[in-house]
Amino acid sequence: MRKKIIAGNWKMNKNLEEGMGLVSEISNMLKDEYQGSALALIIPPFIHINAVSKLIADNSKLGLGAQNCSNHQSGAFTGEVSAEMLKSCGCTYVVIGHSERREYFNENNAWLAQKINAALASHLTPIYCCGETLAEREKEEHFTVLQKQISEGLFHLSAAQIQHVVIAYEPVWAIGTGKTASTAQAQEIHAFIRGLIAQKYSDAIAQEITIQYGGSVKPENAAELFAAADIDGALVGGAALQSRSFVDIIKAMA
Ligand code: PEP
Image 1 (cartoon, protein in one colour):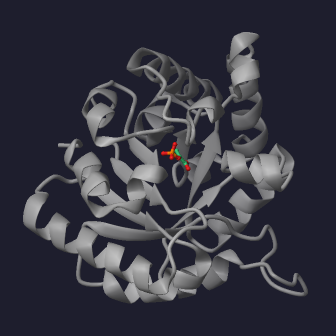
Image 2 (spheres, helix red, strand yellow):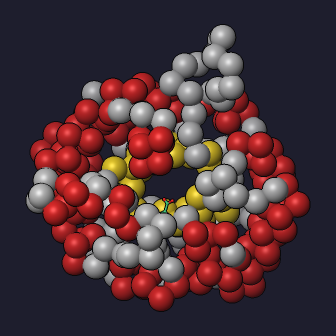
Image 3 (cartoon, rainbow, N blue to C red):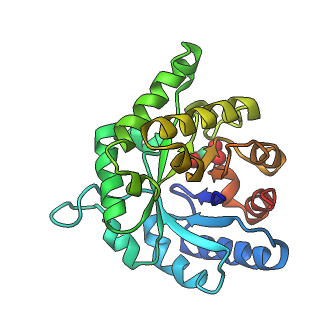
C-alpha cells in the first residue's frame, strides 16, 4: 500500500506570525475534520522550520519538509542550508529540483542528483520534482524530458535507496497558472514514470513509490486526480497558503 502524501509548498510566502497562524488553523481543522490516512506535509521557508516543528509536534497527521537543501554536507558555503541541519530541526522531507529551482537557479539533473544523495545521507526523504515545459509538451518531447530528468537525477541510486524517494510530477505549464493537467494527462505520465522505475529496478519497487501530482491542484479538482490509479497525492503551491483550501485538498484523499 503506497503512502499518500499531500504537501503544501509555501515558497517564499508568509512571515513568521502569518505562518504560525496558518499552521495552527490547519492542525486544528485536521484534528476535527480528517479521519483519513494521508500524511499532510507543511513545507515552509527555512527560517520558519523550527517554529513549525514545535507547533505540529502533537499532530501525527502533519509532517514537515524543506523546499531545498545544499548538495554539500557542511563547510564554507555561505547562505546554504544542509540536509543535516534540516533533520536536526525536525524535517523529514525535502523538495529537490522544483521547477523554480531548475529555472531561476540553474539547477540541473547532475546537481540535483548530488542533493538527492545529501538528503538520503541525512535520512531525509527527497521529493524529487520533474516535469516538462509547455514548449516541450507542444513539441511532444515530454516523455523524453521526463526520462532524462528521472534517469539523471535518480538512477544512480541503489534499489534500497530509491525506495526512500518520493517523486512529484509537476508539468511546468500547470504550476501557478491555474491550468491543471487533465486527470488523463497526469495519469499517463505517472504510469510512465512508474514504468521507468520498474524497468530500472523492479515492478515490486515501482509499485511502492509514491508519485505526487503538482500544478494548480485545488479542492475542486483534487478528488478526481486522487482517484487515478497512479496518483498518490499532491504537491500544492497556491492553495496551500489558505487553511480551508489546503485542508479540503487533504480531505479529498480518503
Ligand atoms: C508548486 O509550487 O509546486 C505548485 C504546484 O504550485 P501551484 O499549486 O500554485 O500550481
